[in-house]
Image 1 (cartoon, rainbow, N blue to C red):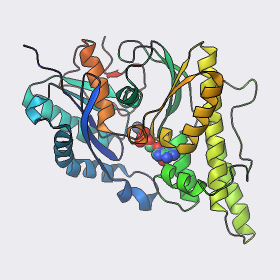
Image 2 (image 1 turned 135 degrees about the horizontal axis):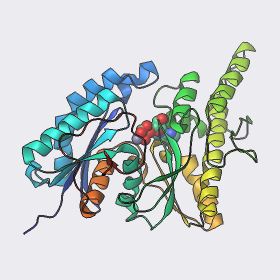
Image 3 (image 1 turned 90 degrees about the horizontal axis):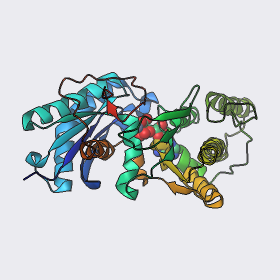
Image 4 (image 1 turned 90 degrees about the vertical axis):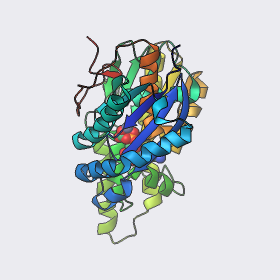
Length: 350
Ligand code: KG4
Ligand code: ZN
């Protein structure tokens, strides 16, 4: 008798240590630890601190995930781990933990592309993805518009990426220059609630006719915010943090939504999926919902807790790979810190 698959997912690419358990498309439970507070004074993630924190958190967080899911270690039938992209030292810790579990239990190991994990997170909430969709990935390290079919079988087509900063990185940098701390997304969001999004006309880059339709650039926006703050400070006036935060947030959101809706329409599709840490942003969720409603586009965004890094999303990819009958990656896989997204599995099957 074959056992029902129970896939353990392991995530450690940045500052979150995540373990998740997924069985046939259903999230059984998860455990999550974060070292974000340890990086706050540096305004960004310090790789060595993140790696040490993963090492400390690995076993207790796995225990929390097992308890949450109501399963025993021995019930795990497959292991999937982020093997890239991410901070090399951080990826190594999770991948080593995943290899240990897979080897000890004598179960197959799958290397997973972290960004495919973000896309798969949505399936845990909204079920299987449609035959074809446009996916906007907005995280701390990446901002891309992708055209995807079957997430684990078909090649992933990049329609456009960012030329410089990722959307989340822009939030983190602007939060730092406003003195709001790290990570920037949640703090900017909170500060923006009382602000006027029209107070400052910050630039919307790459939106002119003739600009590449699906390419982003956020470094000019960050510089414009910095100049505005400098000018106000030089005049000896108080910095209107709420207005700046709201206007910055609106500028990012306008560009993200305009370009992804354009991609859905250009491809003649009817589904837009928005994933990654920045997808937790309330203004992005609201503007995208309003725009998609108007255009007759089905919008899928995972709940905020599944937008930011977690182990469940990696388990979700593992679960899809297992159910597709794809061959496991094996215990020999290496970390690939700068892996480009061509497919969900790493290394790509030959
Ligand atoms: O996907 P993620 O957890 O990690 C990476 O793969 O990078 O994304 C982290 C990024 C950070 O830059 C963080 O500032 C941003 O997501 N973020 C947000 C929000 N929550 C997290 N950005 C805007 N609004 C939020 N509510
Ligand atoms: Zn991520």
